[in-house]
Image (tube, rainbow, N blue to C red):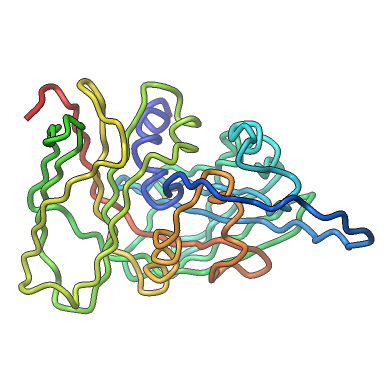
Length: 290
Protein backbone atom coordinates (compact mmCIF):
# COMPACT_ATOMS: atom_id res chain seq x y z
CA UNK A 1 0.00 0.00 0.00
CA UNK A 2 2.86 2.41 0.76
CA UNK A 3 4.18 1.81 -2.74
CA UNK A 4 0.74 2.67 -4.09
CA UNK A 5 0.58 5.97 -2.20
CA UNK A 6 4.16 6.97 -3.06
CA UNK A 7 3.55 6.40 -6.74
CA UNK A 8 0.09 7.90 -6.77
CA UNK A 9 1.14 11.52 -7.18
CA UNK A 10 3.12 10.66 -10.33
CA UNK A 11 0.08 9.36 -12.17
CA UNK A 12 -3.29 10.52 -10.98
CA UNK A 13 -2.91 14.03 -12.28
CA UNK A 14 -1.79 12.89 -15.86
CA UNK A 15 -5.63 12.90 -17.16
CA UNK A 16 -7.37 14.51 -13.97
CA UNK A 17 -5.85 18.14 -13.37
CA UNK A 18 -4.40 20.53 -15.89
CA UNK A 19 -4.88 24.14 -17.10
CA UNK A 20 -3.12 27.51 -16.98
CA UNK A 21 -3.78 30.54 -14.75
CA UNK A 22 -6.09 33.16 -16.21
CA UNK A 23 -6.92 36.68 -15.02
CA UNK A 24 -10.42 37.78 -15.91
CA UNK A 25 -12.45 40.96 -15.48
CA UNK A 26 -15.71 40.18 -13.71
CA UNK A 27 -18.48 42.82 -13.51
CA UNK A 28 -20.05 43.74 -10.19
CA UNK A 29 -22.74 41.16 -9.31
CA UNK A 30 -26.39 42.16 -9.52
CA UNK A 31 -28.78 41.21 -6.77
CA UNK A 32 -31.27 38.66 -8.06
CA UNK A 33 -33.87 37.01 -5.85
CA UNK A 34 -35.98 33.85 -5.96
CA UNK A 35 -33.65 31.85 -8.21
CA UNK A 36 -34.00 28.15 -7.39
CA UNK A 37 -30.80 26.42 -6.31
CA UNK A 38 -29.37 23.93 -8.80
CA UNK A 39 -29.11 20.43 -7.36
CA UNK A 40 -25.43 19.43 -6.98
CA UNK A 41 -24.20 16.55 -9.15
CA UNK A 42 -21.22 14.21 -8.89
CA UNK A 43 -18.24 14.98 -11.14
CA UNK A 44 -16.04 12.00 -12.09
CA UNK A 45 -12.36 12.01 -13.08
CA UNK A 46 -10.30 8.84 -13.52
CA UNK A 47 -6.75 7.63 -14.04
CA UNK A 48 -5.45 4.10 -14.62
CA UNK A 49 -1.78 3.49 -13.79
CA UNK A 50 0.63 1.09 -15.55
CA UNK A 51 0.39 -1.44 -12.67
CA UNK A 52 -3.43 -1.58 -12.99
CA UNK A 53 -4.03 0.63 -9.97
CA UNK A 54 -6.92 3.02 -10.50
CA UNK A 55 -7.85 6.33 -8.94
CA UNK A 56 -11.34 7.83 -9.15
CA UNK A 57 -11.64 11.49 -8.09
CA UNK A 58 -15.17 12.53 -7.06
CA UNK A 59 -16.25 16.10 -6.50
CA UNK A 60 -19.63 17.82 -6.58
CA UNK A 61 -20.72 20.64 -8.83
CA UNK A 62 -20.87 24.05 -7.20
CA UNK A 63 -22.29 27.46 -8.00
CA UNK A 64 -20.51 30.65 -8.99
CA UNK A 65 -21.22 32.21 -5.58
CA UNK A 66 -19.59 29.34 -3.65
CA UNK A 67 -16.02 30.04 -4.83
CA UNK A 68 -14.00 32.63 -6.75
CA UNK A 69 -10.47 33.09 -8.06
CA UNK A 70 -9.56 34.43 -4.59
CA UNK A 71 -10.67 31.24 -2.81
CA UNK A 72 -8.18 28.89 -1.20
CA UNK A 73 -8.06 25.88 -3.60
CA UNK A 74 -7.48 23.34 -0.84
CA UNK A 75 -10.41 24.68 1.18
CA UNK A 76 -12.64 24.53 -1.91
CA UNK A 77 -11.50 20.96 -2.50
CA UNK A 78 -12.38 19.99 1.06
CA UNK A 79 -15.84 21.49 0.61
CA UNK A 80 -16.68 19.83 -2.70
CA UNK A 81 -14.98 16.43 -2.27
CA UNK A 82 -17.47 13.54 -2.25
CA UNK A 83 -16.41 11.56 0.82
CA UNK A 84 -19.48 9.38 1.42
CA UNK A 85 -19.52 7.23 -1.71
CA UNK A 86 -19.40 3.51 -2.33
CA UNK A 87 -17.43 3.13 -5.57
CA UNK A 88 -17.33 -0.12 -7.55
CA UNK A 89 -16.00 -1.17 -10.95
CA UNK A 90 -17.46 -4.19 -12.72
CA UNK A 91 -15.80 -6.02 -15.60
CA UNK A 92 -15.49 -9.50 -17.09
CA UNK A 93 -13.73 -10.81 -13.96
CA UNK A 94 -16.30 -9.48 -11.48
CA UNK A 95 -16.81 -6.43 -9.26
CA UNK A 96 -14.13 -4.58 -7.24
CA UNK A 97 -14.84 -2.05 -4.49
CA UNK A 98 -12.45 0.91 -4.35
CA UNK A 99 -10.92 2.15 -1.10
CA UNK A 100 -11.85 5.62 0.16
CA UNK A 101 -8.48 7.41 0.39
CA UNK A 102 -9.23 11.07 1.20
CA UNK A 103 -10.31 14.36 -0.40
CA UNK A 104 -12.71 12.57 -2.76
CA UNK A 105 -10.07 10.10 -4.01
CA UNK A 106 -10.98 6.41 -4.30
CA UNK A 107 -8.34 3.84 -5.25
CA UNK A 108 -8.06 0.20 -6.27
CA UNK A 109 -4.98 -2.03 -6.35
CA UNK A 110 -4.21 -4.50 -9.14
CA UNK A 111 -7.66 -4.71 -10.68
CA UNK A 112 -7.24 -6.97 -13.73
CA UNK A 113 -8.10 -4.44 -16.45
CA UNK A 114 -7.72 -5.85 -19.96
CA UNK A 115 -7.32 -3.77 -23.13
CA UNK A 116 -10.41 -3.98 -25.33
CA UNK A 117 -12.70 -5.01 -22.45
CA UNK A 118 -15.61 -2.91 -21.17
CA UNK A 119 -15.98 -1.83 -17.53
CA UNK A 120 -18.77 -0.10 -15.61
CA UNK A 121 -18.22 2.43 -12.86
CA UNK A 122 -20.94 2.78 -10.21
CA UNK A 123 -20.90 5.50 -7.55
CA UNK A 124 -23.45 5.44 -4.72
CA UNK A 125 -23.36 8.56 -2.54
CA UNK A 126 -25.67 8.97 0.44
CA UNK A 127 -25.84 12.73 -0.14
CA UNK A 128 -25.78 12.96 -3.96
CA UNK A 129 -27.30 9.73 -5.25
CA UNK A 130 -26.09 7.26 -7.88
CA UNK A 131 -24.10 7.79 -11.08
CA UNK A 132 -22.81 5.21 -13.55
CA UNK A 133 -20.48 5.20 -16.55
CA UNK A 134 -19.11 2.66 -19.01
CA UNK A 135 -15.84 2.67 -20.96
CA UNK A 136 -13.51 0.38 -22.88
CA UNK A 137 -9.85 0.06 -21.86
CA UNK A 138 -7.44 1.48 -24.42
CA UNK A 139 -4.35 -0.40 -25.59
CA UNK A 140 -1.18 0.89 -23.91
CA UNK A 141 1.41 2.53 -26.13
CA UNK A 142 4.91 3.01 -24.65
CA UNK A 143 7.69 5.46 -25.31
CA UNK A 144 10.43 4.20 -27.58
CA UNK A 145 12.66 6.93 -26.13
CA UNK A 146 12.07 9.92 -23.86
CA UNK A 147 14.27 12.53 -22.17
CA UNK A 148 13.76 15.77 -20.23
CA UNK A 149 16.41 18.44 -19.61
CA UNK A 150 16.52 21.92 -18.13
CA UNK A 151 17.47 24.64 -20.57
CA UNK A 152 18.00 28.41 -20.43
CA UNK A 153 16.79 30.59 -23.29
CA UNK A 154 18.17 33.93 -24.52
CA UNK A 155 16.09 35.77 -21.91
CA UNK A 156 17.63 33.72 -19.05
CA UNK A 157 14.33 31.91 -18.46
CA UNK A 158 14.52 28.24 -17.54
CA UNK A 159 12.35 25.81 -19.46
CA UNK A 160 11.86 22.07 -19.74
CA UNK A 161 13.06 20.59 -23.01
CA UNK A 162 11.31 17.26 -23.59
CA UNK A 163 12.05 14.91 -26.48
CA UNK A 164 10.25 11.64 -27.15
CA UNK A 165 9.44 9.03 -29.77
CA UNK A 166 7.00 6.12 -30.01
CA UNK A 167 5.59 3.75 -32.61
CA UNK A 168 2.05 4.51 -33.76
CA UNK A 169 -0.01 1.30 -34.33
CA UNK A 170 -1.76 0.87 -37.67
CA UNK A 171 -5.32 1.71 -36.55
CA UNK A 172 -6.68 5.21 -35.93
CA UNK A 173 -5.20 6.57 -32.69
CA UNK A 174 -5.24 9.56 -30.38
CA UNK A 175 -2.65 10.32 -27.71
CA UNK A 176 -2.06 12.54 -24.70
CA UNK A 177 1.39 13.68 -23.53
CA UNK A 178 1.57 15.10 -20.00
CA UNK A 179 4.51 16.79 -18.31
CA UNK A 180 3.84 17.42 -14.63
CA UNK A 181 6.01 19.36 -12.21
CA UNK A 182 5.97 17.26 -9.02
CA UNK A 183 6.59 18.63 -5.56
CA UNK A 184 8.04 16.91 -2.52
CA UNK A 185 4.75 17.28 -0.65
CA UNK A 186 1.92 14.82 -0.08
CA UNK A 187 -0.02 13.32 -2.95
CA UNK A 188 -3.12 15.41 -2.26
CA UNK A 189 -1.21 18.64 -2.93
CA UNK A 190 0.16 17.10 -6.13
CA UNK A 191 -3.37 16.04 -7.07
CA UNK A 192 -4.67 19.61 -6.96
CA UNK A 193 -1.63 21.16 -8.65
CA UNK A 194 -2.39 22.94 -11.94
CA UNK A 195 1.26 22.63 -13.03
CA UNK A 196 0.66 20.12 -15.80
CA UNK A 197 1.50 20.66 -19.47
CA UNK A 198 -0.77 18.67 -21.80
CA UNK A 199 -0.28 17.95 -25.50
CA UNK A 200 -2.99 16.13 -27.49
CA UNK A 201 -2.05 14.25 -30.67
CA UNK A 202 -4.14 12.98 -33.58
CA UNK A 203 -2.14 10.49 -35.66
CA UNK A 204 -3.70 11.91 -38.84
CA UNK A 205 -0.90 14.49 -38.64
CA UNK A 206 1.90 11.89 -38.36
CA UNK A 207 4.14 11.51 -41.41
CA UNK A 208 5.33 8.01 -40.51
CA UNK A 209 4.65 5.23 -38.00
CA UNK A 210 7.50 6.35 -35.72
CA UNK A 211 6.45 9.68 -34.25
CA UNK A 212 9.11 11.86 -32.62
CA UNK A 213 9.08 15.42 -31.35
CA UNK A 214 10.92 17.93 -29.20
CA UNK A 215 8.86 20.36 -27.12
CA UNK A 216 9.89 23.36 -25.02
CA UNK A 217 7.78 24.08 -21.94
CA UNK A 218 8.24 27.59 -20.64
CA UNK A 219 4.94 28.11 -18.79
CA UNK A 220 6.33 27.00 -15.44
CA UNK A 221 9.28 28.16 -13.36
CA UNK A 222 11.50 25.08 -13.39
CA UNK A 223 14.75 24.97 -11.44
CA UNK A 224 17.61 22.67 -10.52
CA UNK A 225 16.47 19.74 -8.39
CA UNK A 226 12.89 19.84 -9.70
CA UNK A 227 11.22 16.56 -10.63
CA UNK A 228 8.93 16.15 -13.62
CA UNK A 229 6.86 13.17 -14.71
CA UNK A 230 6.47 12.67 -18.48
CA UNK A 231 3.67 10.35 -19.56
CA UNK A 232 2.20 8.99 -22.79
CA UNK A 233 -1.39 7.70 -22.96
CA UNK A 234 -3.37 6.25 -25.84
CA UNK A 235 -6.88 7.71 -25.49
CA UNK A 236 -10.29 7.26 -27.08
CA UNK A 237 -11.72 9.66 -29.67
CA UNK A 238 -14.41 10.87 -27.23
CA UNK A 239 -11.88 11.54 -24.48
CA UNK A 240 -9.64 13.34 -26.99
CA UNK A 241 -12.51 15.72 -27.80
CA UNK A 242 -13.28 16.19 -24.10
CA UNK A 243 -9.66 17.02 -23.28
CA UNK A 244 -9.27 19.22 -26.36
CA UNK A 245 -12.06 21.48 -25.12
CA UNK A 246 -10.32 21.77 -21.75
CA UNK A 247 -6.85 22.49 -23.07
CA UNK A 248 -8.14 25.03 -25.59
CA UNK A 249 -9.17 27.25 -22.67
CA UNK A 250 -7.04 28.92 -20.02
CA UNK A 251 -8.46 28.05 -16.63
CA UNK A 252 -7.55 28.99 -13.10
CA UNK A 253 -7.95 26.29 -10.47
CA UNK A 254 -11.49 27.23 -9.45
CA UNK A 255 -12.60 27.32 -13.08
CA UNK A 256 -10.92 23.97 -13.58
CA UNK A 257 -13.00 22.43 -10.79
CA UNK A 258 -16.26 23.91 -12.05
CA UNK A 259 -15.88 23.71 -15.83
CA UNK A 260 -16.98 20.05 -16.30
CA UNK A 261 -20.53 21.46 -16.15
CA UNK A 262 -20.14 22.73 -19.69
CA UNK A 263 -18.34 19.77 -21.27
CA UNK A 264 -19.45 16.49 -22.84
CA UNK A 265 -19.73 13.60 -20.43
CA UNK A 266 -20.19 9.81 -20.47
CA UNK A 267 -21.38 9.81 -16.83
CA UNK A 268 -25.07 8.95 -16.45
CA UNK A 269 -26.64 11.17 -13.79
CA UNK A 270 -23.49 13.24 -13.28
CA UNK A 271 -20.63 15.11 -14.96
CA UNK A 272 -17.01 14.49 -15.93
CA UNK A 273 -15.55 11.57 -17.84
CA UNK A 274 -14.83 7.91 -17.03
CA UNK A 275 -11.85 6.79 -19.11
CA UNK A 276 -9.37 3.94 -18.71
CA UNK A 277 -5.96 4.27 -20.33
CA UNK A 278 -2.72 3.11 -18.72
CA UNK A 279 0.02 5.72 -19.26
CA UNK A 280 3.70 5.01 -19.80
CA UNK A 281 5.24 7.35 -17.20
CA UNK A 282 8.90 8.30 -16.73
CA UNK A 283 10.32 10.67 -14.10
CA UNK A 284 13.29 13.01 -14.42
CA UNK A 285 15.21 15.19 -11.96
CA UNK A 286 16.81 18.33 -13.33
CA UNK A 287 20.36 17.99 -12.01
CA UNK A 288 22.09 20.43 -14.37
CA UNK A 289 21.29 23.16 -16.86
CA UNK A 290 21.84 22.39 -20.52
